[in-house]
Length: 135
Image (tube, rainbow, N blue to C red; front, side):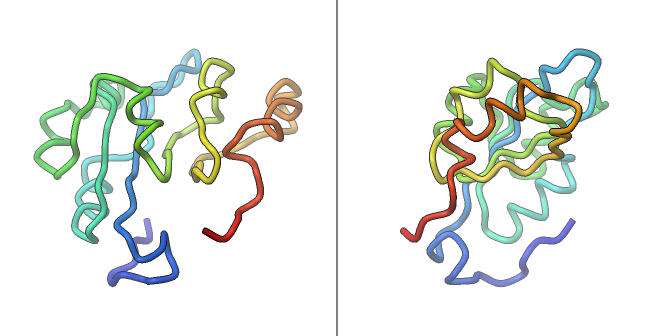
């Protein structure tokens, strides 16, 4: 994982990034987008990380490991989407998640669009998929 060691004024307008990681809801997906070590690196670089409560349990990480690493554990996935500049996931967004994204939000995940026609058709209409615009 790469985390910029110093603040870059061109990245996020020079502000600390708000990073959110939610529990994967895709059937048979038990991984989590951020490990406690990743959280520690982001927080150490000055960013704020919010983890959905229980998001790491299936991968073997409990909420305390995330709070010890500096994350805020949040019960509401909507709150995480609403407050985050970047959402980190393992897999592609599921249909229930499409409306949670907002314009300008970064999605850091693996998109396998060729295997998912529904997502391929829906993704261009998702607010997070709009082209980057200067702020």
